[in-house]
Length: 282
Image 1: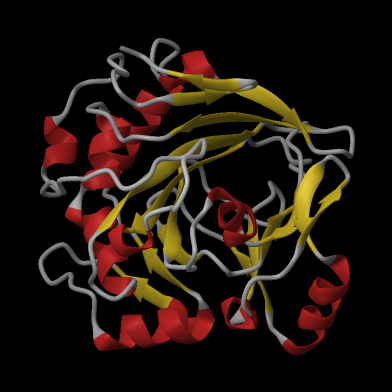
Image 2 (image 1 turned 120 degrees about the vertical axis):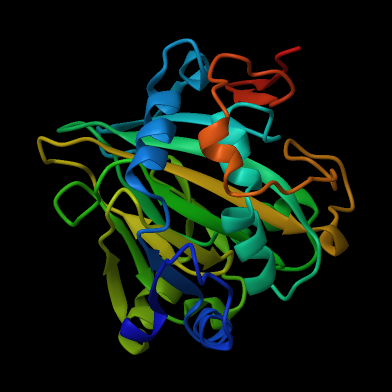
């Protein structure tokens, strides 16, 4: 895993050839300390605000008598969560890792695995879902931003290193979830390294949409909240309308905009997903 781990330095940060090589080889890079303490506390407060995105949270069963709370929205909006998604540090880094072509905000979500009750997610590829949405190419990726420290005890992310090179795996309905074909996963586990991606709240993981990943239930006495921002290339504009957006221009902002933003309640234009359809905050 070491060749995919880097440390952020605000004074020198750029996406280097070594980062691109690691992303293309392993399907991800992990960047330590990408947010400073003031920034992560600001993001955490925004996500916890009961008058913010929390208003649109819903519960999903994991098929194993546990649950996760989720908030999912399509467009970044103008609050702190949207500003973070549009920063050069997040969107700009992801764009460079994906080859430099223009990207847009495909969706974002907050996944809340609460202490003692948080559920599991089966092995899957994000493109296993997004392929069905009319996206022809796997030119898509996500940034995994833990709000809390994540480790094996509270259900951290697990990946099969290099599994993005398997191509898209068929996804089946399994235990109330859509999961990757278990036979393929079993065989992949025999030849690919299984990584538990333990992260601190200031870290970020940038990962390819075909990287196989999973997470266990949270049986610890600590919650595990994670903010995830997903991007699609403009050139990969879905050929049909679906519940996630077709190409929508996104203007990136400077990293300093995060601490300058104080908006937490205004959710205008984000288009939240709720069971049964979309809900727009106008």
